[in-house]
Amino acid sequence: MTVSREVEAEIARLYHADHWKVGTIAAQLHVHEDVVRRVVGRLPKKAHTKTAASAPAAMVPYVDIVRETLDRYPKLCSTRLWDMLRERGFGGSARAVRRYVKKVRPKAQREAFLRLNALIGEEAQIDWAHVGQVPVEGGGHRSLWLFVMVLSWSRAMWGEFCFDTTVHSLLRSLVRGATYFGGTPRRWLFDNPKIVVLERHGRAYRFHPLLLDLASAMRVELRLCHPYRGNEKGRVERKIRFLRQRFLEGRDIYGIEQGNRELLDFLDRVGHAQGHPTLRARTLADCLAEERTRLLPLPSPLPSTDVVASAAASC
Image 1 (cartoon, rainbow, N blue to C red):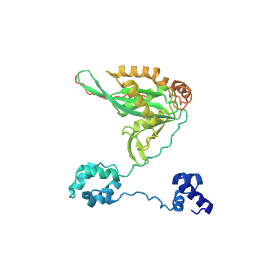
Image 2: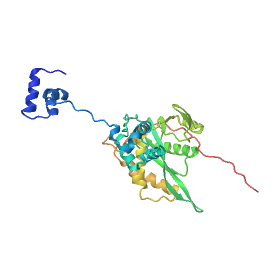
Image 3: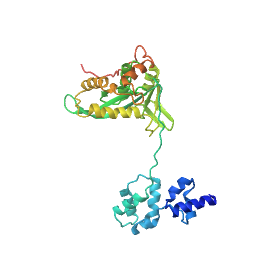
Image 4: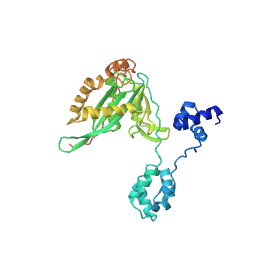
């Protein structure tokens, strides 16, 4: 970049007479810092680069393999690298490897996610959380799961405790959740559990046939999240975290019936009394009342989700 003699004279005056810094002169005169350095006789700053010379002497023969391995597996722990180097004759300590790896490990690139805004009555996000164990009659314990359904527009939620995450348990919870909301949104958004999608290869996937039957009866579209996309079902994940902190923390659940009664009461009193995160002047209960008018009507009669199993009996 070339500048006029007048600008060069001004740069020299500000630098030598008024002792302005290079960055200040560049900002005020709208020129590049390298121009200022050239005029005042200073060389441009050189970017600092890490070289093999910065490694400890014992590490120098192994610099290439460390960098190559970290390029392929940037999250690999330094102790695993130490094991690999020892197999190749490295005699240094794990601390030396750790210090060097800290200098040369590639920085993780943060992925930008687009904020997704669902239309009213358009979507419900669905997920489960393992919340502990409960005692059962006759001794022993059973795992306790929390099923959560969240309407994406209003952020209203419904949930229930269950003993398993089988497809039959899923169907029952979906119907009960739709009954609570008084209708269904146009799509159900799931993660990728095997009770929902039997197999998936890229964008090709196969839903469980019983879930497809229920979706057909309820007139709902099934949709899956893309793997590792944290922005696609963040609403239900935040609600699960909210329930863990505000409802489950410090509370003992002794049975399904007791837990579900207390959960429903909590949602009505506390959960839906929260303010909406974007519609500041409204509560979740207010938004739910509006969204209920846009939900698809429930079929009549509701699809049966009972499980009928045969059992042998001796006379």
